[in-house]
Length: 188
Image (cartoon, rainbow, N blue to C red; front, side):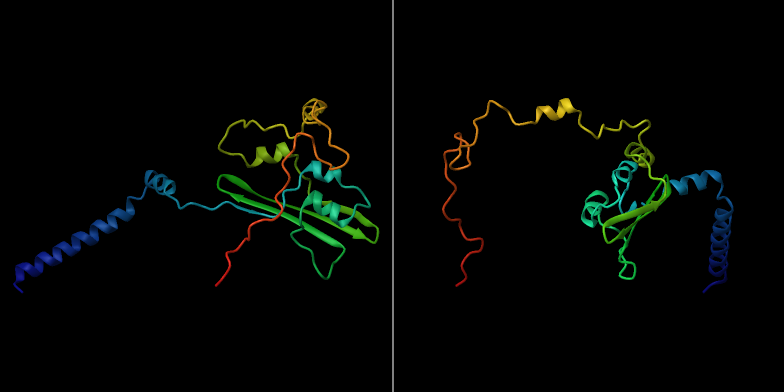
C-alpha cells in the first residue's frame, strides 16, 4: 500500500476517534432532557386488592370467612401455617405516581371474624384521585345510588303479574324448546 494511502487512513481514524471523544463531552443538559424523553415504556404494575375505608367500615366482628371474602376479595396471602389469618397487600407502581403499598390483615376464630388491623385505607374517591395523574381535578363519579334512583328500578306495578299455575307472565306465550341441538357435531 502506498505511503500516502496509509497516512490518509491514519488521519481518518484519528479524526473519527477525536469526533467520538468530542461527542461524549458535549452531552449537556439539553441532550439529557432529550434522552430522558425517549425512555422505554414502563408497565404499570398493580398487585393485590384495593381495600377502601368504606370496605373496612363494613367489616363486623363475627362475619363468616365467605362474607369477608365477598367484601374484601380473595386474600393475597392465606398461609397453611396461619389458617386463621388472611393478609391483603396492595401495591401499585406507575410512572409519574409515587409507589403505593398498603397492608391489611384479618383474623378469624371459631365464630368468625375476630379482629382486623392494617394501614390507614383511603376512601374510594381519595384512591381514584391518588392514581389519576394525567387529568387535573378529575371528576370522580358518585358510587352510590340515591333512594329516588333505586325506586326507578323497582318492579313496575302496571306489568302483568305472574300467573299462579305456571309462574310466568301472561305476556309470555311461547314455551321453551323441548330439546336443544347438540353442542358438538357427531363424530364419524
